[in-house]
Length: 308
Image (cartoon, rainbow, N blue to C red; front, side, top):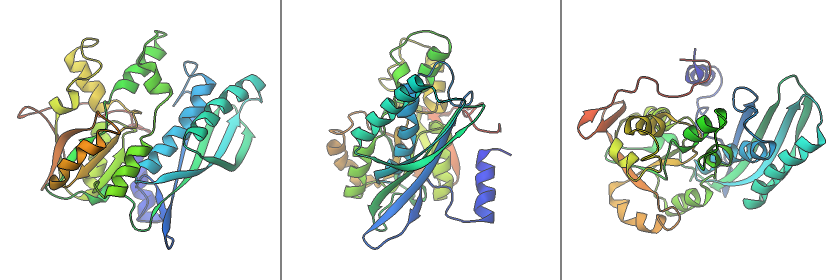
């Protein structure tokens, strides 16, 4: 059993609405978005990640989930399981956590602490979105265009550099990801995105999840994903494709939009100039990645908890 199969089982047993980036609690004017993520030592981070970055990143991944549904993040709850209360470590961790909370004007509202042999940090985040206006994974339709908000594979390459002990400008994409809140709010305000997901596990896996949720097929053009890629000239073209399609933790937004809305993207490019059209939604199911007209075979779609 893998992670997606576990989520499918939970949906069967408990609640069919499980499986999007956040759970929606409907209210009169605004709906609340609730999400939770955890990071565990040796699985999500190791000695290569400093405590400041850990404090920043555990908040960032939750903020990104709220952004993925077009929401505004509001409140965070922090849980810490630590070997010991090391004051220096705690102060650095809280500095990173405080800085990202300040950037997005978030309030820490509670949480829990406990002693553990393995360091684990977890966040529950709450955001809001206008009533019935959350952007779901299931909203894509035949003929929609597929867009991405930036380059992918940079965090994955940065992780390799960190784990090998080499310095690299790309390490920041792994350590200090920037959630795309402003872009998400603009997409929601203008009603441009028909479906959306944030890229935590890579384009291939997350786009496939969006396709399955919407019930259609998505076809991506690799050359549009790779155009002007920052890793060009640093690694081989084949490696760039692997990083870009299967590398996780970039936290870019992948979204679909009606064809006749394409003229609006000049305005969105003012927020993120790296937005690009990368594919189409068509009849059928699953995901195909083309290089020109030739399908690309993906042997290893990327990281997944509990194996395949």
